[in-house]
Image 1: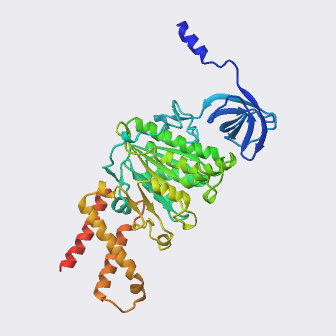
Image 2 (image 1 turned 180 degrees about the vertical axis):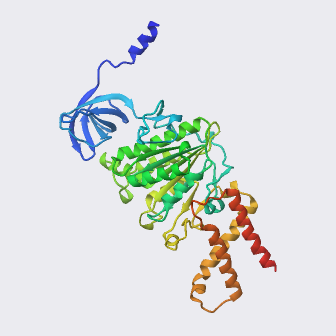
Image 3 (image 1 turned 135 degrees about the vertical axis):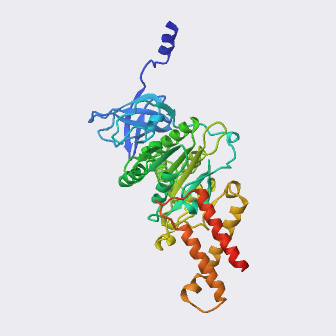
Length: 441
């Protein structure tokens, strides 16, 4: 009995490590605080505020440390005392999170009261051994015909959703979250407007899916460190449910705003800017998050959809390039389709799933190839048909036009009108079969 208390005493620090604020540069507090380490949480005692400011050590430079605060700096002055807590940031996880909306630290922000109980889970885990992964062979249904038929997603697959602003990205993401068949939805809304977070949560609540959903939110006005932490908290929550044997859909909106927050942190700590001002750490942190998703042998799969906000319709943006190189496929939404009221504005020719052949039957692969060839034929002859210019075989042009109308009718879908993967693929098979019959006549 006494041994237990002696062991506990050994863990109590002899003295509390502390230092002083030297100066503040933008978002970074420069201070002296001995023996602190990167990732450690410190408290800054503001002279003109009753509330201590919590900050994280983001860099160590000789006998000084750089602290990034979790809230706005008010009341901090030169000489303010800094105390090291000896702790690192953790995420709050547990089944009580289901149906809740939480902040970057797992604290509820939905006015439903505090969490009854929770477990602390590390934010930063070691890289996953690639040999613990298993092959992805099982498709999942999103309810969106264009995705389920042309860009089929497998359980444990990581997909990108690439789109410019105002082309229906958030609407499509919400529709997928409403209808996905996985056990748990973990949704990270990073850098969004507060209005959009409320609308997103309300839309999920109306479908009755909130009871198996956790929403982690860090809105645009919050400090960059908060936005980054929200991503790692969301990832930790997804991993917790995965370790409970549940299949998880991890929805991340958006990687671009996460990259921007990382860029702000990097520049504040003195990292050199590279392409478009992004610092080198941005391109190491993004793969670290993506690789924590997948299909695993000893636990549930984490299927993931990462949205990428393409600036100026530049699909070769450095962040888009980085994400596309790591993911298992991408869905591309184009402004051209959106302007024609073609929703969802998915360009099935520019979109791809790297596991498409692995998780679909040979017959469906052949049907999709036939439809894609028909789309290409229509695009090659579209101007000719729209202008009504005489030329070519009129019967052939009419056949191309009719096929396109069938394809367009298939691709157009009200996101409130959901169709299962099997039903969508069966409908596509019926369309291609009708073409074969007409060709044989």
